Length: 179
Image 1: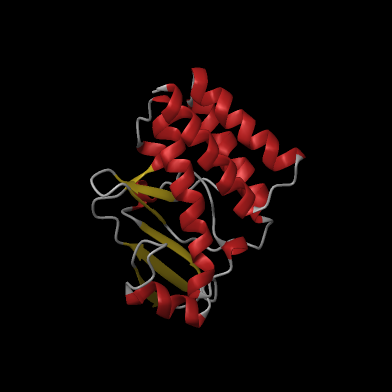
Image 2: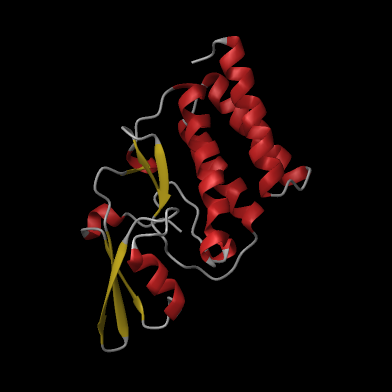
């Protein structure tokens, strides 16, 4: 799913019932640290979700350079996705895309613009997200991203194993002095 919230003033209109009642309560509370804070407004058969993105930029809008930066964001994205379950939000419903992952440069923090989608395998979403990143990467960053994406697909890595692999590659990038 490719949604540019910036083009829509950080609002998204969906069918009423797209969000479960408890999801709305958690997302509005501001306590949910995996997602951008949200407000909901109902109009007839639709619900309008408004995202508070202050200080955050979608990964799609970032000008990433080098393996170090790509892998910092990738690792933080995976760790943040893992947190969704702590708030009783099913990870498989979280849209994982460069347009829904937001990064705060000052605090080096990642949050999702939570857009529920029909449940899909988390590992497949992660592989697609890495593939999206790979399109914009070059050199070592592209090689490393391909290595992770290939491992997720062909070695059937779950989220925890993918986080471990990304952590090992970040260590390798650091030790080799790769930018």
